[in-house]
Image (cartoon, rainbow, N blue to C red):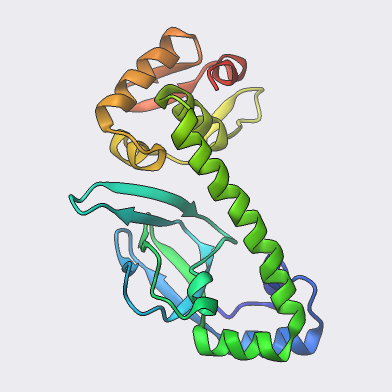
Length: 223
């Protein structure tokens, strides 16, 4: 499905552009479909494009030499990723893999560079969005450096929780303990200990393989 003008304007980089500029961008967009688990690109490979998630979720992660995984972010609908190589001519800075069946829009590096040269307003959009991402990764470094594992897990649960319409909270994403460990930067065993601590504090309840949030206030106190 081709991207619409309205969808383009919802992307921070392009929200201040006029009709002719948006039309030029639309003409440069291509589509990608991924099955769950399919790798879009690997760290260190020559970067081909930047991407926007139309539907689904894409894990952006790094791998250590011994195979341990650190999830940098999970890109969902409307999120952009792999923009940096568009400007620094470097390789892909991380790996990207579909966490579920996903559809993406892409813009090739050469096309994006041409569009930025033709429309300086795009460059301003990138600067604003990059500033937001810098803040995001600064907070992530702070979490890894100064928060306990239990605090990191509580923060993640709050981030992926949404109102259930009945005054409670429900998790909009489901993680295995290993996946959660990759996101918060720890081991599966430590996730299990954090769950027990949160359960003891009255913040969550473990229901078989599901985490049920019992108290937002109790979860917040664990931050």
